[in-house]
Amino acid sequence: MVILAIETSCDETSVAILKTQGKSAKLLSHLVASQIKLHARTGGVVPEVAARAHIEKIIPLVSRALKGAKIEIGNLDAIAVTAGPGLQSSLMIGVDTAKALGLALNIPLVAVNHIEAHIFSPFIKPRIFSLPPARSIFPAVSLVVSGGHTELFLVRDWLKYKKLGATLDDAAGECFDKTAKLLGLPYPGGPELSKLAVRGRPVIDFPRPLMNSKDFNFSFSGLKTAVLYYLRDHDIPSPLAGEGKGEGVVVRKKKISKADVAASVQQAITDVLVGKTVRAAKQYRAKTILLGGGVAANQALRAKLKACLGGRRAESQKLKIKFLTARPEFCTDNAGMIAFIGGLRARKKHFTPLDKVRANANWEL
Ligand code: KG4
Ligand code: ZN
Image (cartoon, rainbow, N blue to C red; front, side, top):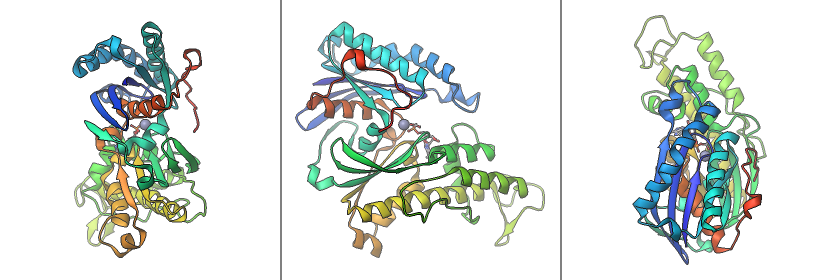
């Protein structure tokens, strides 16, 4: 089957073409038109601005993807499209484009849940790849960490999972973005904060909300508020330690810098994420931990999980859990992961009737 996939749930317009044959697949093209520059001006995504940009980009991107894949439009077998969750006005552009193409070409549609796509994103590779045997991977525990979601799942098989917990307030990505803003960093804050954190020391003991609660829920709004108060109450001179004016706070003979704040925030967020994920994996005797979503691009988070599971530490030998994380290009929003779910569902003939395909901003798994 040749599947065209469309992703427009937030601020990236993305199109992919995937060819599947039995258990193997080949990503023939994968394009992402980022709106970062557009939203940098306002320091965040303005839904109407995002939707307009999707409208401008989507058809040229579909044409380029077909050309790049050397596929005639008439040779497409199905279309996979993100139907939710996300920004309603952004989702509608992708969904309506997919419906129009599906109708014109008389081919079936797969309405894809964006979070489900993040769950299985660690399995996608840039070119040819095949599905590993289910018994070598599952049961798995999946951590999806993005700008809008922080959710833990127990995954029993391909497309079979149940939610173990989720954030009660802000998502982890939102916490990265909002504290980055407090530190005066440009949009998008997550990657900027993690870049700054490399130069800092995690010396501030910010709260680790719900770290030791028995459930698998998360909460990040208190951490964001703690950073707000810390910055209000302390004189933090400049991004680099020791620079700038003012008395500042001194720890181990060095003034606390914004880089130290960034490193401390990152440490608090990743401690909670890793702590809960590893506990879930132990409790459910998972063979694998899967990590996906925009925040999965964070090197500190990847390294911390790896150190617990795959490194040479005694702990890892006890746990014997595989760690699979999405490649950077499949962490942030992309149509590659939508195509992958499209392929899995098309194989099972899980198509969505054209009149039932609707953008649903609040589509809960
Ligand atoms: O999955 P995604 O592209 O969009 C949503 O579905 O929300 O995730 C975007 C989020 C943003 O909050 C962004 O700041 C965060 O992922 N992010 C990062 C990094 N790269 C992206 N957060 C921390 N460190 C990074 N390196
Ligand atoms: Zn996402």
